[in-house]
Image (cartoon, rainbow over all chains, first blue to last red; front, side):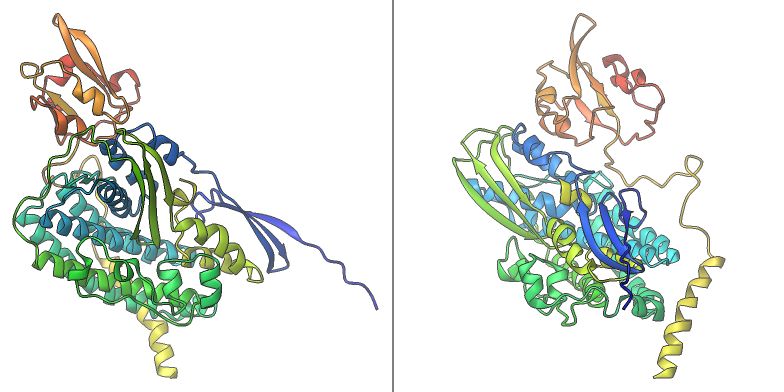
Length: 367
Length: 127
């Protein structure tokens, strides 16, 4: 019998590929099939954890925004909550409500941006433009409430830096109504699109056991049928007062992950509506010294960011600077652990689909 | 089942209606989005109120504010190339002297002109 010659090629994926953003991977292929995928992170490394050790807490609240551009509020929320937990700081009720309103808007913004990028990965450019156009509505809300479009620098120790105005509440309700209409539109042109279903159904299938082993969190974990949401299981801020459900699906493939995110947008819209309706009157923050020194000790605080579980491990030595901050970002396991496992045995054309169905953020991964 | 599939194939053509709509984008800088108020843009300094305490320089995360000599005393000078527009200088100014205006047309090809002297800081930007 003639021996078959095995010939494989190595293809680079990223860091300047439109479908990979700043993530680089070497893909070993044989024909159309992927033999192995080797991730090479580090193109966006900025050294946040070290930078934070040289900055005071108000300065760090501004810095943590930059960890993930698309979901800045969740980063700020995790940081301020970690310090507040360490120092037992009081936050007024209104401040807590405003924080969650903005964080949920951040989640909607992140997921809508993801719809655009996922469309682009599938070669569906129109949906990319439309989704990014809708994202602009939320960026305008950010601008109105915080003064910054992409980097809000909004949360501070003891509350938020600005109050929200009645005009903001009005515009927020209008935006939510608009987004709800748009969600139906996305269903018709994108999520129920035959080519989208064909490209994503059965692709990149992750079982529940594998997902837990690989450290998946957020929509990627919930798409495998595991009902785990930090907002539900370890509630923080005023989440216990809000009525919502953790979105789960059982299939665990790219299609299930996509629909999980789609349903999370709808759920977040409902959460923001409840929060805006119940928004209490009163002060929105308490005065905290810019050189506030958290007491000696350490704490661990987790929030549910748009992409998954985001945790801050903070060690304080009693000085105004944190002794050490360790950030556990959701994208690290998505792109460095789950992605190579799912890509093994897939087709080359499915690589961008698998990658974006996991929704990693290279900025959060490299930090 | 077949009808369902046909619907899923043809419904995305609803996108074609966008051909008859105006584009979402604006022709910047000829058209600009209306201001919503409170945008964090270029700084402005009230030279009379400024006490020269430099708490602004202390809280600045990017060390963009430096003390310089002007009219016989020290005033802050802002390097917009370093500034991240976080507004901490305004928030912690005890005299409410430094403020962020909503002026955001700050693009320049010259590095030197990104450094705003106290004299320029005293004037309303864009005038």
